[in-house]
Length: 64
Image (cartoon, rainbow, N blue to C red; front, side, top):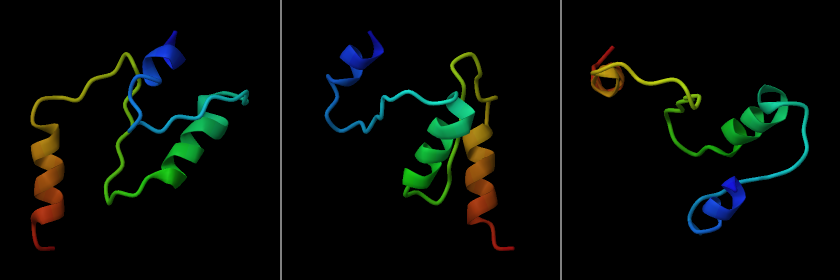
């Protein structure tokens, strides 16, 4: 089912293959493929607290 949904979005990169669990291979592969300056990881049952992105932005835009 998930793969059927992902195929509807050609701009999304995904890899589906057998591995030893998400943290062993999948997350590491995703982090290595990332091209941004900031990487976030959010599990399906997690959520960001209010103002999270404002705080992150403030950290990266404030002169240190």
